Length: 329
Image (tube, rainbow, N blue to C red; front, side, top):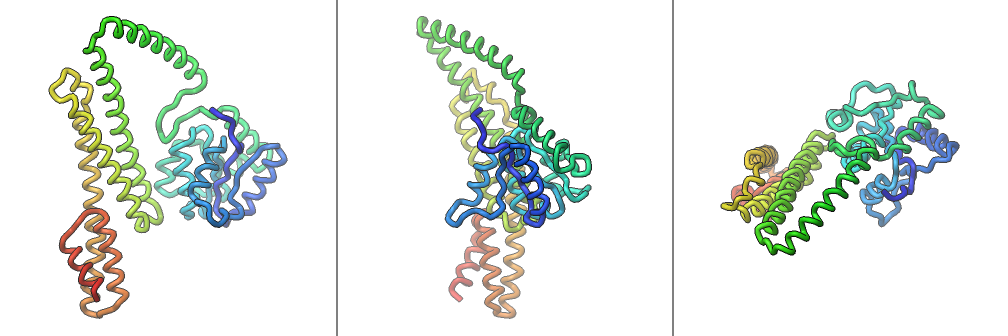
């Protein structure tokens, strides 16, 4: 792992700027570097990309947890990104206002973390030492809920990998000498079976990301993003089907043994998309029926906007006809 640019990324609500500045001062006194979006992102820069890169470039992610940050879509986005990309041992949720209850999506991601309170870890030596411990063990814990190896385990895994590579080299040598085509086919099947498993895991992760947005404070505004995640999950499952089809009827088909899991994921995705579609169609029809009575332009615009959300989820002849009529008004 390359050297990080910052020791700490500070995720906070602008309403908690005073506390954030106190922490910045303590980090500076301790000789630790940090990233904090205090003045905002400069014009012309990709706001989410800058923050994502800063999180990647920081060893520790310090989340200043409060009722203010719980309500901030920016801090929630930062926490979600950190959860999906950083080791849990380097994510420090730090409660600064005595909060005991957190939103459901944050509890889902961070419920098993060791939350710190400002009362037990005051700004200064106690907090700094806790941060130093996290910096000293940057690869401990999980990433996005996935178990990852510690340094000691990695050494064992490294020697295991070396042994496996050595065995593979021997196998390749034997294979090249024997010209055994069947073994080549087997190796290809094993590699593609691993890809198949990875594709299904990716689809599962996309569904989870859509669910996090759904449970967020701005779930209505993120409908299109939720839909995109779910459509991408369907596309991933379609690609897993195409991969599996290459081995239908062969002795290797047993390695592609997640039929039931794939079917469950498809059913879950389709149920979520149907639910979202029906909700937007209902909003659209309410506005359209009100428009027919009042002839209000604002109701017409509301209806068109809701129809566009619904049609982004899936086509519907009735809604397309209504939208065409409203566009011509």
